[in-house]
Amino acid sequence: MGMKLAALALIVAPVAGFAQNYDEPRNATVPASGATLLRVDARAGQLRITGRTDLTEVRVRGTARASTRSLLADIKVEAVREGKEIHVRAVLPEHRDCCDWDDEALLDLVIETPASLALDVDDTSGDMTIESVAAKTRIEDTSGDIRVRDAGGDVWISDTSGGIDVRGVKGSVDVDEDSSGEIEVYDVTGSVHVGRDSSGSIDVSRVGGDFVVEHDGSGSIDYDGVKGKVDIPRKDHYHRRDR
Image (cartoon, rainbow, N blue to C red):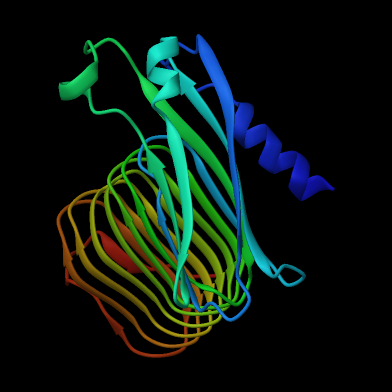
């Protein structure tokens, strides 16, 4: 019950700075028996994806928000199955085609999926939460905070701006690139790899494998509880945390 209330709170919460004049639901359901992958193109808006062991379908519950009624009518959610893949896509009007620059349109999405499906998520803006999934997760995000909880497979992330907070992964975590924002990774059974971090601190704790940072521009690196090797840039503001 608590999880469902949290999901509803997510889709009704207003976005800071957004003129919320009009809103409507955008829902879809796709059978998932035999599927192996869920692809999500979320675009602008908040996103929550929750894995459930009792589902055999993907359920999409969304709220379209716009500053005008005409924009609201152009916001859609597409949910289809192609072979063993399920595709969920937010369709939003492009400013260059339809709108004044002070007009806004977004689609908040709450997606419940069978926990066994692997995830491939592409998001442009808005905060994201992914929780209780059992397979591999790939995330490519432009802006907004990323929060991952209780993942049962490897997690790969590429992020332009916004914080990254990953906790409870049965597998490895690879932050391929992060331009700005803090990176926090805790309780990982495998290794933690950061390819390129331009700015923002990195905090890693309780890692079953290695901890490797290839390139770091600015910001501190703190770590503890790493069972494997540690390979990070040698600078005086990077250090092992004593407990």
